[in-house]
Length: 237
Image (tube, rainbow, N blue to C red):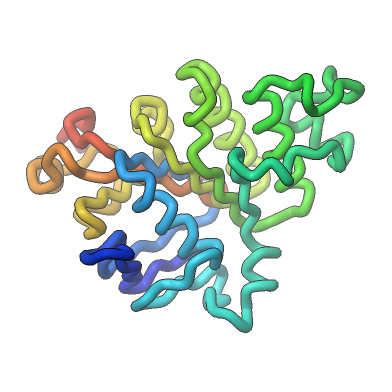
């Protein structure tokens, strides 16, 4: 379980990227994180992985606190897939990991010849080959089509279910994330308004307004989503 306990991350000028965010992200869920604000998305994922320690509050991963003297343990527990980090796209992946992400036909292809979607699956394969308990995937929709985003989320959901892997995916656009999320975490100006099933209650939807942020975290077989535009959430149970 990933636990966010009163997490606060300030903006560089003034105000908060995250303020008093409290949530429990269960293993076995696929979580999608949707937000119109890339800084908020990054701050949340950075707080989980230890890239940026919260100014207030605490993050725990399987009862391990995310703090300076535990970062090596945290990085063993939580894989981090960042398509913007060119250092990750290398061929050093076990065959079974390539097979699990559907890349075995490309085993002899140079990495430079792979499409952005294939390269991202390679990064996911490298991450899961290390057998983490949780996996963070950062803004894959920056370079993928809507169809590819859907295919990636279905792959990540399958990995979450089969490996009891907690997966957190940040997205700028939310349609596919809403459809696949097991849980929704709604943020507005850094404050969490709702955490639960995607069928958000009308009160949470109304309070969010047009600037609600979206984020989803998948862990051990389930999906959690944070929605940038809550208008797409039905109010049914």
